[in-house]
Amino acid sequence: AQKITQTQPGMFVQEKEAVTLDCTYDTSDPSYGLFWYKQPSSGEMIFLIYQGSYDQQNATEGRYSLNFQKARKSANLVISASQLGDSAMYFCAMREHYNAGNNRKLIWGLGTSLGVNP
Amino acid sequence: DGGITQSPKYLFRKEGQNVTLSCEQNLNHDAMYWYRQDPGQGLRLIYYSQIVNDFQKGDIAEGYSVSREKKESFPLTVTSAQKNPTAFYLCASSISGSGGDEQFFGPGTRLTVL
Image (tube, rainbow over all chains, first blue to last red; front, side, top):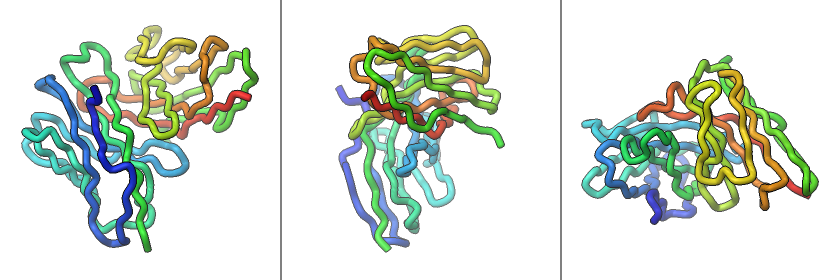
């Protein structure tokens, strides 16, 4: 079963507008972490933002914020004031803290391709 | 500058040959990882290492081998046993592999089997 679902394969946004990238997850682990990464065409994965399952506040990092709705098991990424350089693939990932035991792997979604129009 | 380097950026291999992908980090991280990325898919874990001289198989370890003789280095060998090795390979590291620490990635190696 897919543990991380990103339902938007591709989308476009106008420069300077805000955009929300969807991510839903499935876990029975009481403790987990959620990550968002950006992958530009060069291929390198760039860490954007992290949300712990017990964090009371939604995570924010500059123009990036995470809309964490624990009961709905969703962790959507919000990018405010989009820039041309935001055009990239965006991946949501999860690490379970107990179910995985010593396995430190991240479970990845299939990604969303974001294009920013001038 | 601290970071992760991978070499080469592009690699071509003939069928039946083993090739080794390099991954070096100067971040003083304990944990290192190798991922494979195919078009239209997320990353899949090949191997990971939480400490020097120790490593574990990930989800798709068959046809791959690794070593971790130094903290800074985690080379990946793609053997001839790997049936479909053409892919983009990403190396990553994290401070300790514990719950909240993010993984930092290298620029990747694109392997093509001719």
